[in-house]
Image (cartoon, rainbow, N blue to C red; front, side):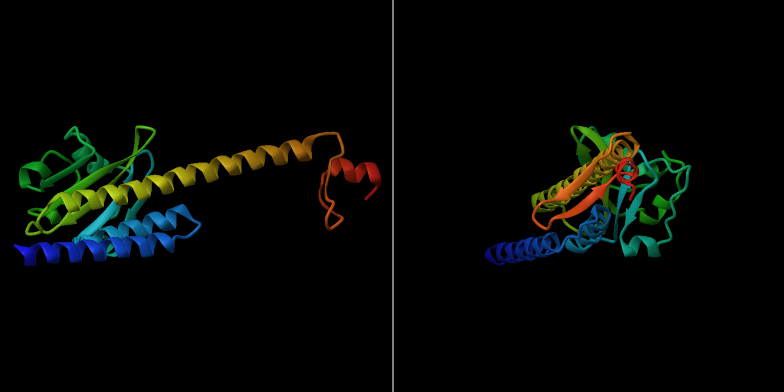
Length: 212
């Protein structure tokens, strides 16, 4: 029993170290970070493959092993991972993929995972579901509290990146709105830096006023 507990703790320590190292080396691009989380999730759980499926768009992040399995998302895709998770009434669901389960959906790509374990977690922003993180595991892998805790951490990390992506989008829209006002106003506007004593931004109206 002590040996089993020691091995479990050793695995947990390696997982936490791996998560910390990846989080510290995150990129400034949220999409790249989400892709890293997807790859990390399949590695940490010794899974077969993993994916992050967006609900409102066709955007899909898949692990390298998933791509080798030949999955290609089409316009007719059913957002199957979200449905499998959402229909359970829980944000995290773990179930075996059976022939009976597959028969409920039109998509056929899930058939290659018959007999495997489906582990899905819904990503939410302000209670609204935005995507689903899914990991396909060998049926022999034991599902315990540490596995659920791990997918919660990975789901939370994706939520952070989704929030950052929304913030960056809002910032870009705000900057574009400011640029249109700055360029479109008939008043001359000059933005100068008093420290280096140089003009930083000058709009067209100011150029016309001063003849430059």
